Length: 313
Image (cartoon, rainbow, N blue to C red; front, side, top):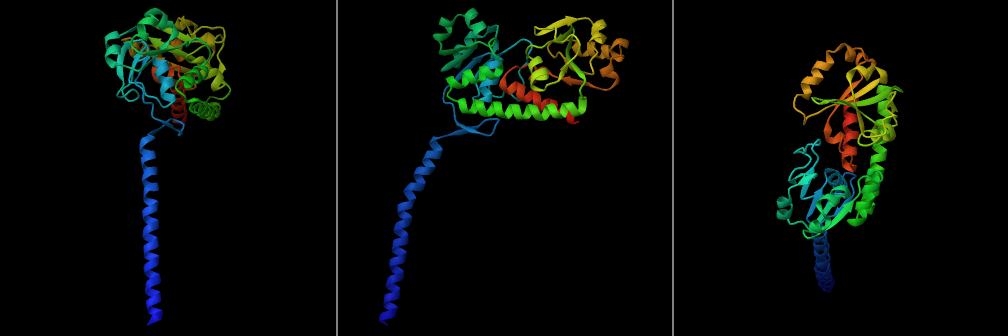
């Protein structure tokens, strides 16, 4: 009987100690849960996480918007360029603030941002003092360096330097993949990119927006005469298209100039176009303004992914 009593008392002590241990552990679990709640995180396109940016941001440049989004920061408002339309899917729940050249100042003031990011060119035109009265203003010179340089500059301002490096590493890896795919599909042939619109025909050169993606990141070979175009693009007539002797052509049909689709349809039945090597070998690839003309971190990454999809078809 004494043994039974001793056993029962031992069991009771075990249950009491277990209950005490449970009560002591509970506050620790609650603290962890609270910490997770207070540290809200958002995943960027590289899969890393950052604390949610708690400031309301206005971007007076569609390109700066693309850089901010690559850092996991979605601006509350953005302007756009007259040749680069905003797509609902990518810019959902972002307020439209007009064109970068002539932003809607009433909309900007009404947004009540904490910070404004703006291209240096337009900061000078709009007046930096005027913008500083609205919110803290960060001026980024988009004419200096590459998009990687600009991304790193912005990352220092928003304290996301690690995210910038992760994004760049992810971009470089994707560029290598797509470059290898392009070599398989296009081979070592010469490449050019043209824009067709109701206003005329232009060839893109070695500079942004398309030159760095095609000829640096993807290591494609420029067609004859493309390297001589050191500016963004050059207007040409259809009669000189054969001179470029391109093995592959990337075609961008303007969506902002009415009648551009019709111009392209007419061109496709033109003997000059039909006689091009790229056309005869079915190496013509149609691309779009978004994301190809968006020379920003996220814009270029989306362009790589778009080309991967096109070449994989």
